[in-house]
Image (cartoon, rainbow, N blue to C red; front, side):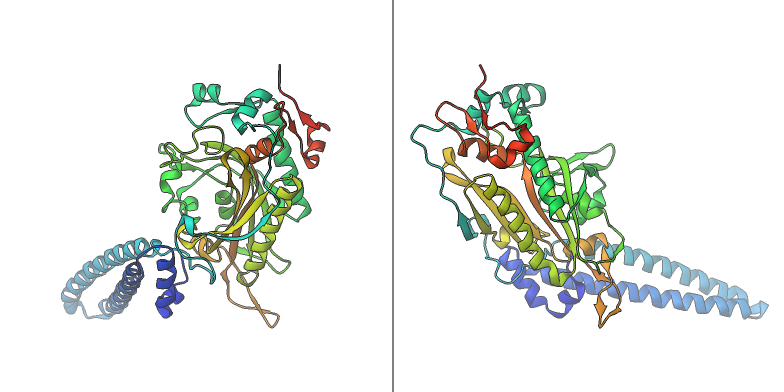
Length: 425
């Protein structure tokens, strides 16, 4: 959730943020009114409770002949307290629902608008060109014995696949390279659970506008995660962190699941848009004042990976309406996919400021003049360092006329020195 003090003291700022996201400013007025009603209900309950306590003392010390009338009054007060308590519960539920519609405050400079209103920050490299008709990644994957969509569909349905042979090896190589880069950058490696409780999924913001993307196990009241961001955000839930030595950085390697609801007819060929994939996700807990610098650091790590893999890409500043509820700013790095003649997202990195931490109650103690003050929410950030989709750009960019694919030099140590992936007989 956003800072309630900010909502109360600067509602115009919150309204501008909502409007930049394409949301109505009325959501802010509704949240303010619900917050006011909640506080009024709590005050009324507390006043009745105080009166009830005072009356209880009067009953205890009253003469015997006065007790029947006082006990009757106590019963009436008790009924009023119960009613007031129920009113508090209802007001709190209404306030929670209204506040949940207020998304994170976008950072100054984030472009307004929807998916198509992004701003290109920079591009790197020239898009690959060929003196032959290039194959798309699925045709290459089939020639190499790397991707088997037909059997994936047979076993699990549409948008599932098998990575086989060099395809499986490439994914392990990519993930291992990314893990080593994360270790070198000071991240603690993690293999997190991929089933999480509702409060963790909700706390990270994935049960809002993205709820239809999430798989749920109804019988267990657990959710399958679409990114390690979710369990890593919940890792320190309810804790007070010591950030005096710097940010806490984690790299979570996990399988991820997405329903791809609403994507009927989109990217049906190959492994660009699938229900299951692997990903190495960076996650950082830091102080709010250091969050923007940390965000740029994550983008730098992503770019270095893509550069070393010989991929052409662009970095875009995602428009406010395409951020998702938790992000205050998001950069996507999109690689050039030759057969599509366009850039496609390979990585995302988001600065969620204190939005997730407020929901999950993750705090730290800021130091003022060397003296620790009262606790405050941390800032959280996340960013992809490798995922299955990267195989798409790798195969298409480094293909040769005979259907073989040159292995980027940086991956070769993870593939036993293999320099070229050859078509299978």
